[in-house]
Image (cartoon, rainbow, N blue to C red; front, side, top):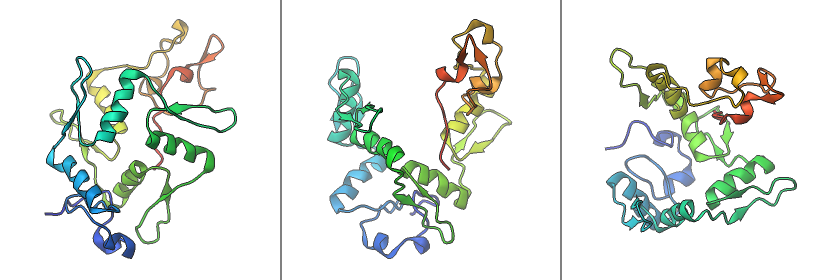
Length: 213
């Protein structure tokens, strides 16, 4: 049975090239080879044959590559380094590195296949979120009684969850800005000039949760 929502548009909107590629019957993702499709199916089947042997970890993974990338969390290795002038950021995986490089070169290799849309994105995850604006899918649902709100984006769901929990994970390093706007504590996008403490911008200590939708 085909999932009503997928990372790809319905088959009516798939390109002729996509229709020729091996396709997952559960989520409509397409692959260049059958072997890649078989590996992908482990996600749906829950099969994770590769185990981290690091002490007190024992996490499991669907592919050997995922295990190798995970091992760098323990080793601290970052073998993929940006060569752009004044950047030199480094990354644990090639996929993280490739996503970063697109910031410099402006490449957006993931176009929306829906008619008359023409938007494109740097990552497949951002494309997947965008597709939900067409399908109306809101897969992240609040489980609190009498709430029932749902969201297209996981980060928005996490922000909403803090309304119920009262969690305030974003702390300003300057004590005299402790009573800053709740939006800052929720990790909202905010201009550096909005609030300053001791000559520093509070947003210097925040994680930007901007989603390119």
